[in-house]
Length: 92
Image (cartoon, rainbow, N blue to C red):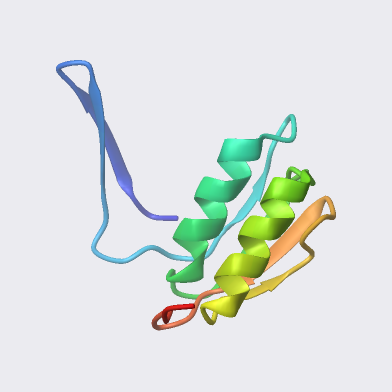
């Protein structure tokens, strides 16, 4: 997604002026990995596709919550999730 990742003094730092959409595939479905990429992709430039995404009900609820804030997400509850970045999200 274009972030620079660095480890210093036992901490992991991520920095980016602006994130870009990407295509990623998890080796194993990961609950927190799926949610973290989705939330980053919501405000990134372009489209992000996640393959082998987690399908847990909690992930689907999280996607529905973000959609109620204006996120453009398709495929919640399936192995492939597509997120089109938007300029901003609003309260819900």
